[in-house]
Length: 364
Image (cartoon, rainbow, N blue to C red; front, side, top):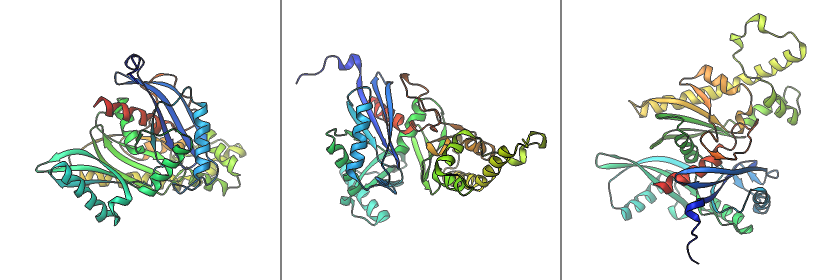
């Protein structure tokens, strides 16, 4: 078949698929001249335990959910980019001496065996050259167990929509910050899902840290349930009331003596230890970054993910850590028709980042 003469005029259609623990999110767009126009976005809830602890347990249920999602997209998918559930991949900066490309592949394989005690042929891996360092080089190594990647391949095969590219949420979100011009220097991203939080420190042209914290939005829900709320009531409270606040800063005359609101304040106090745990993990990551990268300066902290649907959590972080903390906008520099994210905690940010990471890569 000949080349499509309209491709350069209309741009390339891209569909990003972001797999989560409890849902699948998708953003569809069209790229042209290094910019992305959003065509639409969809989020579909997964059946209970279809994905468990980040692993696909039921390929058929995940495939059915993905097929429903594709039916609700504005048009056929075009080029598909996807990210596996965050937390199952291994990410590490490694230092290696300069060497030819064919030797580098073997050296990376030895690094995988050393750190993971796993033969490289049982993994799917890729690496990015971050920088030169004297006679050596710094690589960012990303590894996923091949058996887990196979499950994603089976999901797409079942619905006859083969993906062209796989990426990880960490790199997608870092690309989103760079694309939207949100920060010129080093930055941190807090990506809180239902079960875990990923802490990333990066720059538009470098990557310093990625670590997983065993704290997610569901932990806050469970605390609220212990106060007598049902799961549904706890989720509603998280999204409608500002439960997290610095209690010491509340003036006596500001306290509402209405009994129902006082009860909510009590629930908020129950959540403070978890919020403080997140503050401690952020501080620990900042200390590690400062000790390993002397002379570097971290400018901003961005938060995203459904876990930040808890009202007041972002403000609490901003009051208790430095540098400034703010929400990561999903569609700040996009044209077109971005989906609404009311109350979602910027849940589409990773999917939007997948789109721009592909465009930025292709633009070179």
